[in-house]
Amino acid sequence: MKETSLCYIYRGDEMLLIHRTKKENDLNEGMWIGIGGHFEENESPEDCALREVREETGLTMTEYRYRGIVTFVSDRYEGEHMHLFTATKTEGTLAEDCAEGDLQWISKEHFAALPQWEGDKIFLDLLEQEAPFFSLKLEYEGDVLRKATLNGKPIR
Figure (cartoon, rainbow, N blue to C red):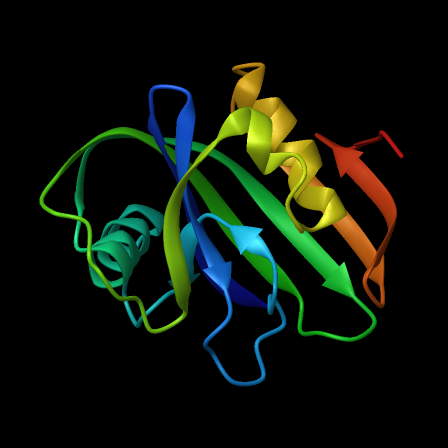
């Protein structure tokens, strides 16, 4: 299984998202997601999140929290452990260009109508509820979420 990080950066009622439109053969193509990517050798989840946010946005997270682990299982893609973070403070200037897509501050209300993975809606709801640290397993067939398990208990 690959190891990745994903971070949702908040500014008031907005989140910094990336509209995945630029990367070739991107399984997230067309989706709106948080900022993140793959671990490099010897990185901790925090190291990866900090590096990915800095590389993709130009920002340095100064207040952030490790919120949970999401395990993705798919009949189409390699399995993944995604380490999920939120940030409420950053330093620096937002990059004008990102190699993976377009960066944009989106209101939480508007985000619900944008293309996103069905499972993302589950963990974003957990983040909004201020759920304690969680383990979420999402099982996909193609692009369809077939099963979701939260802290070992089926929720779908």
